[in-house]
Length: 411
Image (cartoon, rainbow, N blue to C red; front, side):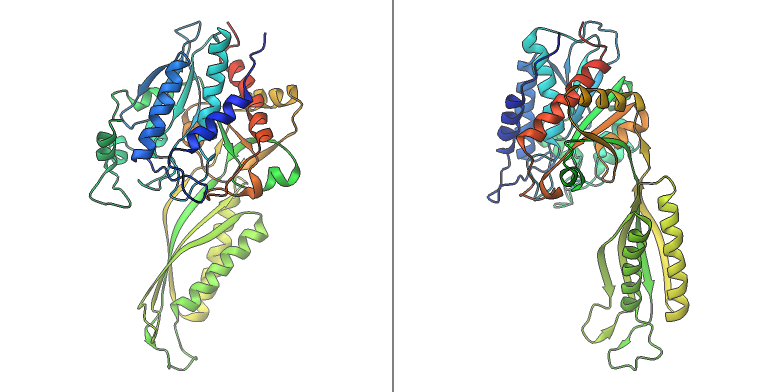
């Protein structure tokens, strides 16, 4: 017997969730542990209980909605994502993966069936990192990648007098469960919109993510010499002009190597119309789908740095300020997704995951799988973010059977 998932119910749940924190532009503003997030969590809790789940909350506020299995001793299979958004977010980044898990559970409950192992739908707290830094902090805390105390002590990026722990208390989402319990999952699945244009451009509804690519985050500090803007051009040590060369080099290296690189923030001193800048700080990041790609990009960039410093007489320091490791996903779980897609006669392709999701942190410890569906124009983190009902249904038709298979099949 197969389980009849309801694509219409799934879609309706996404649309109803999107009303919470809805913005006039058609998007969503639902920052982590805000009143809007609290409202969304309560709705998810009520839906999960109605579908036969018990709901547990850990000390970092993550929700675990468990549908019991026939074997209570079996390690659970988890499926999830996040409900929080960026300030100018869309409807589907995060909730798609959470509510897909809910629909799997609803379908089992409606059919009066269980899998051998329990299925846990997870809503991770603060995936986006917009309100509290870093991003994906609750999943990182659960997996031991980030210290739990550091997660709780993080200051609100909009009100530094308020902490993550304060927000948990204010919304009553400070649970008592140990976040480390999530390390005992037998498997973890996450479905997500691609946040890129590849699947839509190729007409493929399912992306099987083989790995999350490694990310390096840097501060590049260029030090020159201050001076009047009327100083003759020969002999200048203009930190901003040198920085401009380095920023363009980042772009060129990314294009030449098949990676990605971006300068995201620029600060300079003195920041005055009449002065040659003597110090520029550039926030930058690089990422590459190949295992040695980041190392090759960094080597190429440092070669440019050496040439620019020698020619312009400036000093350049590169400080690593963060990043994420390259995390491969579990071949057996990816194969289950491929079989399910084939069974539903859905085209699929393997692809790397260039944007970290909670599955990256979980995948360090627990066998994990990440799956993408297309989004229109590759647009995400914007009110115009959208998907089609067909893509929504395709993801459910693929991940639903794969999760049930991983949970030991129908009991």
